[in-house]
Structures are given as structure tokens and as C-alpha cells.
Image (tube, rainbow, N blue to C red; front, side, top):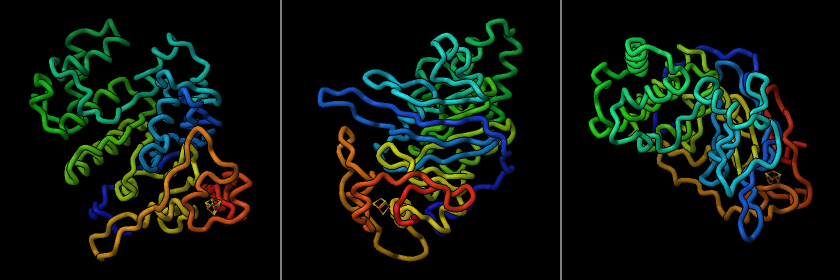
Length: 334
Ligand code: SF4
């Protein structure tokens, strides 16, 4: 496999088999005058303790909405219409707002998409990190707070002087690391990073990616890493879940999915990774996604699939385990 990121990010500690997150049949819809847009169509997967799971797919496939659903951050006109999100055994879908507030940042946190722009321009880095800590630990002393923030900055590879800087004094990569420090400030067991490196150049991407993995290993957190860059994902995650039009169509260990992708959409995604070793025309996934308000009967990928068969137009292929931990939703493997 060749990618635009040709130096592998350092490998890390293997995850355990203990499940910390179980997502079961999660459904998120957006209300529109023309009917509900089905953004997340009953996805199910789990995450092991210490594992990094990549959630990949093209723009609009529902990756960010799925994470918003997991963390109960879906805003109207969106709503969760069904499913369970079990984090350490607690179903987040059933919690009220007060219970959720206690759990956010302490049990689960989000490094949002475009995190670099999510910093408050008129607050120093220290004040922004302190904000989340004080919300959960109001009795912490000033000295302890400062020590904790300096420790966090050090953990994400930022110098101590960053404490007194404003966001405009930081580079893109530094801002992103501040966001990582905020995400881990209260030691959550789950961190969801939504395209955390997409706005950075390739070299800085690698540095920030390595920071994420180092922090994950040090703290033993589990991570969901959302992205569309299959090459970068290949170096960062333990397993990959491929999403298409609100559905998970394949999920497997990273080695297995790159060596033998089974779903035609995954194959197209992998074939679209540019190579620096050989010049070849980039593969394009032909066609358009169907109207998400009216999914077709049968397979969700039928209008763009080069292998479509008659059966695909009538019967929904279930997500089945073809090999250990390698699941695919496609009639080709029946
Ligand atoms: Fe293609 Fe049919 Fe498989 Fe869907 S079920 S991905 S249409 S071959």
C-alpha cells in the first residue's frame, strides 16, 4: 500500500478485548419540509478499550452526524429516532441533559471538525483549557489548575509558554494540539476526533496524528477517528468502519481491509488513494448518492456499484462476519 504519507506513524500498544462502547442500531434523522433525511440508518459497532477505530466515507455519508448521535449532540432539526449507545454500560440515549453534562469531557469528549477555529480568539490558551476543568472541578486550587494545564500542554508536545498565548499567536498545528489538550483534560475513556488533521499540511498532519496516538496510549483512552483520508487512517487506526449514505457497509481490522477490501465501495475508496510511486489515473466513484429521504429498496450502493446484480435492487444485504472481525454488507459474498 502506498500513500501520500509515506513514513508510517509509530505503531502503538495493542487494544484489549474489553468493549467500552457499543452502538446498536443508531438512527438519526433530519426533519425537512420534503420528509425526513435519513442521515444515520441504523448503524451498529463496538469499540474496544484502548482501540482506535477509523470511521471513513465521503462527505455527507453521515460520519459527523453519527458522532453527534453517539455524544447526544444532534441539534434540531436533527433527532435521534432509535438505537442505543452504551458507554461503559450506560445508555447515553436515555440520559437527561444534566446527566449528560456530568459525563461530557469526563467520560466522553469531542475534538470537533475545524477545531482550530473553535478556540475563542479573545481568551488565552490557559483560560480555555481551564474552562472545562473548572466546570467539573470547581474546587480545584489555582496552583493545581495551573500545574494540570502545564502538564496537559507538555503531554501534547507544546512548550510551557503556550499557557499565556492567545490563539492568533499559535500555528495551525499548535491550535490543534490545544484542542487535543482540551479533549483529554478530564481523562475521558472515549475521545472522538472529527477530521482532526484535515485543515493541516501533510507534514503537520503527521505530527498532530502522532500526538493523538501518543496521548491515547499514555492515557489508555479509546478513540474514534473520523476522516476521509484512507492513507492517513491506514497508519493511525486499529480497525476501520466504512460508511456510505448513513450505513456501515464494511468494518474490519485495518490490515485486513487494505489487503482484501470486500465491499465494492471500500475497493473504490482504496483505489482512489494517490500513489507517489506509480503514476496512474485516479479512480472515480461514478454516479451520485440517492436522495437520502427516499432510500431505494435493496442495497444502498446499487446506483453506483460496478458489480450490481438483480438481487441487489430488491434485498438489503445484512452486515455479516465473513472472517474473524471482518464484516461486510454485500450480496457478492452469499
Ligand atoms: Fe454492489 Fe450488490 Fe454488493 Fe450492493 S449488494 S455493493 S449493489 S454487489
